[in-house]
Length: 280
Image (cartoon, rainbow, N blue to C red; front, side, top):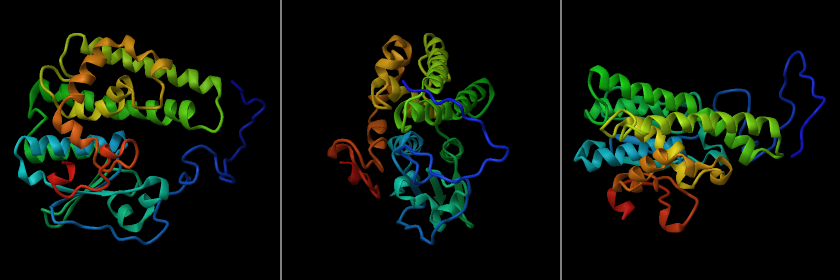
């Protein structure tokens, strides 16, 4: 691997060139809309604007799990936000999420409408709205929230750190890959040790903590993120793999991971979702 040398940071950093890599055309050091673009609105109270990245899958899995429980109020329209084309910088999307990241949810059942951004906040909102997948009180609730927030804090290491330098950066550099691989493996070990004595992250019950963590760390060990499974020796994390495979087998998870997906086998892609029949 090549290694950059001789770089001295300037006294004040300025953005004078694209950084390169897969997402260079949408990365910028300022916030706000770049263009006017109204968001489409469907027939259901819940309007989701997203893409089937791990953070987007968290929410579509949650919605499909709620529907599987019989919560008809969880019916939703899922609209594609293509982040590689800059859809997240349209004025309508920024009005829901000023941070311009997917997913974003608009609940039109209240007046005024409720906007939600940050995947963890959306999961908690839906869990409390429908009284499902989040214990109401006591130790079980605290444990669930601890693991949910653990995932929210850990994913930037796996995605923004390891994923970027291992899979997306224009060149390979040993130091950042080693640094982030070490931390990702430490996190996998945290999960593996915990899951050795627990069926799910919060104990015996499947919760929002599992829904948040599976699209990142579960899919990592079952073979669908960054093509890094051999590099990270994911098969050695046997308890994580058992947990990941159990969640992957859930019908609602299988439906949710297809929503707003525009890559992979054609039969796994559902560009938009407006009714259960769209997933047939």
